[in-house]
Image (cartoon, rainbow, N blue to C red):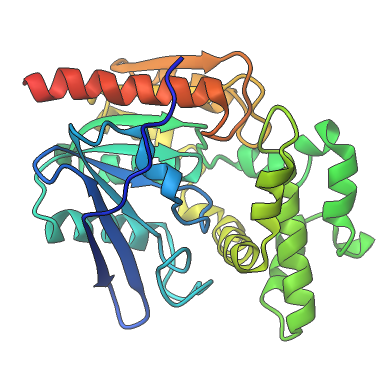
Amino acid sequence: MHTLYPAIKPYASHRLSVDDTHTVYVEECGTPDGLPVLFVHGGPGSGCSEKDRCFFDPERYRIILFDQRGCGRSAPHAEVQNNNTELLVQDMEAIRNFLKIEQWILFGGSWGATLSLVYAQEHPKHVKAMVLRGIFLAREEDFEWMYQKGANKIFPDHWQQFIEPIPEKERDDMVKAYHKRLFGDDEIARMNAAKHWSAWEGSALTLRPNAQLLEQFIDPHHALAIARIECHFFQHKAWLKDKAILSRMNMISNIPAVIVHGRYDMICTLDNATALAKHWTAAELHIIRDAGHTSMEPGITDALVRATDQFADQLRER
């Protein structure tokens, strides 16, 4: 079974001013003349970690990571002004131009898969291949599953903790109710809502409970960014029309891709991946039989590293 490559440090880092509000953190690892790959993190609002550098052979890849607006090492922290899907796509294109890259591979998971798909549909000529994990198509049913009814039937105990800060009369629209508290004037209520929002997601991430991962999710600094930015995006349905991604798959149908999805993914259900694969003739779908959502579950890590090795072999030969 494949595991992550050894830990590495960046050989370059940049702070790219993308507008009057936001500065985006970008780093480069691996080999400067290697095959360019962009790591697109999830959330939205989670930021990148040191382990995210390690899905790629550093001797064959030029590994580019960036923290999306408002999270990680980007600034200002947890900021939602001028923060939407279209602007994140523009940031990715600004990074590509800044680094003088003609074509790159996109590697994205969860929301990172969503954003990678939207970017590729806008800029198909600049995408060489894609590796996507934990597909989230941002359909109406996908928001409903996680934040209204669906996952609550699988995790009724954690759901009770999620709804606890919300009065019963407001529970018919949990995203709206959380948005009211995450962006209210009461700082204590904001932080309490952020921890409950992040704990709900963290509790459903893995097939087997992972206390260490949950602790990372409810860390106050991380929780505030992911809760505010996710809730902001999901309140607006990610600014994507229902089934918008599937309706535009003809734009990228010839781009080679590997799709990796855990069979027991309770954040983004498996039908996201199967629906995408049906619309993508050039994609391989790998269903991991003993995994949930996170990229750090062994079976998913194995499939992702195999995919990046596969593309390194195929594309560098060309």
